[in-house]
Amino acid sequence: MIRAALIQLRSGAAMTRNVAEASALIREAVGRGASFVSTPEMTNIIEPDRARLRSLARAEAEDAGVSAFSELARELGLWLNIGSLALKGPGDKLLNRSLLFAPDGSIAARYDKIHLFDADLPSGESLRESHAYDAGRNAVLVETPLGAIGLTICYDVRFPHLYRALAQAGAKLFTVPSAFTVPTGQAHWHVLLRARAIETGSFVLAAAQGGRHPSGRETYGHSLIVSPWGEVLAEAGSEPGIVMADLEPAQADLARARIPALEHDRAIGLTVLKPGCVIVT
Image (cartoon, rainbow, N blue to C red; front, side):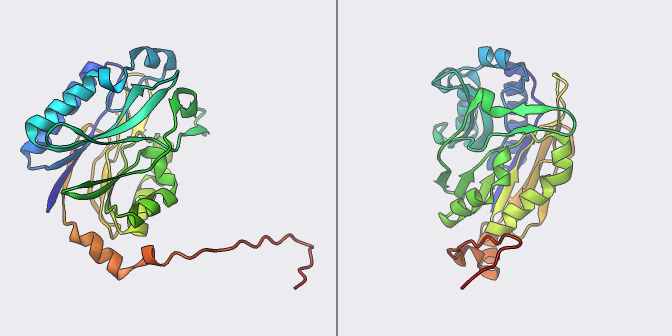
């Protein structure tokens, strides 16, 4: 049995404060019995001014949050997924990077967000992640004593082939740390996360940012833990805090035995028919 906890935050531009608030909630979750904890996307900072964000971001080896979370994982003997951090990349752009810390404080896995959200929203908000961030190129699956974990971030959830590939490689639990907008969250958050769980017969743990941030940006919240059968095991509201659930790894095997869809992929062709055309065979 794994007692998993999701930390819901409302990060701002003050990185030291964000790390301290996340750390306090992580400690509380461990005090309540959690052996695996995940935090949201952009745990260390949410700052819409890209020039300021670049000036504040540090490389992984120099980031104070990375060292603080490493020490916290070691102190608590915890598997700790810091959902993502804004880190300085090797070029002019940033990295949106998820880190999985082992109980000895070492970094067991790194994942850079593959799918970047570039969109004009009905609210008038325009988001262009690709202007600030370099996209990752590789999916990441990490074997742990808790089971095989697939690391993903936010907008990745709209690309089911990523989750299918990870599940077919052995993942039975996915992390989906996020900072969803309110309109897209209200429309799609629950159905997307439940769909990824059902399609792959996997646990989905989605820690989220929630509420009105100091910059004025609003995020949806509703951190979710979803079972391999698509049941919502735990859900937050819009306030910062903790949600927890006990996960039985065998439930993934049971779900996959009942619906063995991961074994039934077939290569397909595509026929495109145009109106008015005569198909001759």
